[in-house]
Image (tube, rainbow, N blue to C red; front, side):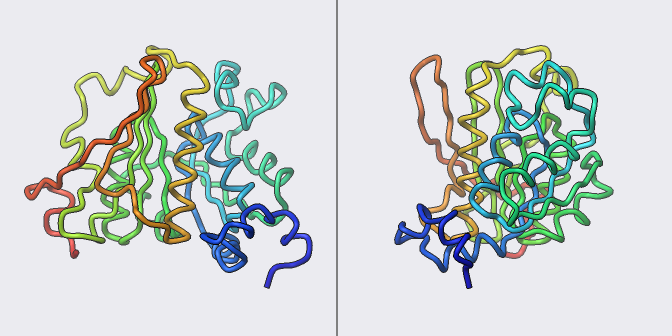
Length: 254
């Protein structure tokens, strides 16, 4: 049952027939893990908290740096040098007291991914290393939970939802990227550069997909890749095929 304050706070959601009071209650009961509080995670975290997602986990072992502030809009100048997870906790508490933030100040890898994923309904990742992405991919497949995966660089971004357990032809992240690119260890925002609002657009879109998964809105983005190229004034979708020989999902229950 929504309180009077909640009915006012989430009124614009409740007015939507696709959401309504029942959908808002689903959001308040939802648990979403955001892996990476960077250019993608920062706006996603704000939108998820504003939407009333009841429990938001944030996994990041990094500190806030001055160069982050050009695009990671959740952080303030006086928070430079502090832990990102603590800064996120403070920002979301100020934004929405309905939200509980769980800090995971650790780097995602094969050793902890399954443990972290187990406590959440949906996982949203915007990390910049493939070891973490592959570990998350295997963890969500085992747990049968949706993975919202977003990436951004320079003037281009991409986004998809992976849940191979939901259909015989649906791919996982490993189907899209079978092996890590050779330059993965050195290529990131620090070397490439990035226009801040591009990360904002795709981070907000990733939050939207996480909310859509909680609400069960159709159609799902699973099986498709959204590609956003603002410099070329282009946005498009591409079909993602499943790899029947994928080492991560070929033998997964569907």
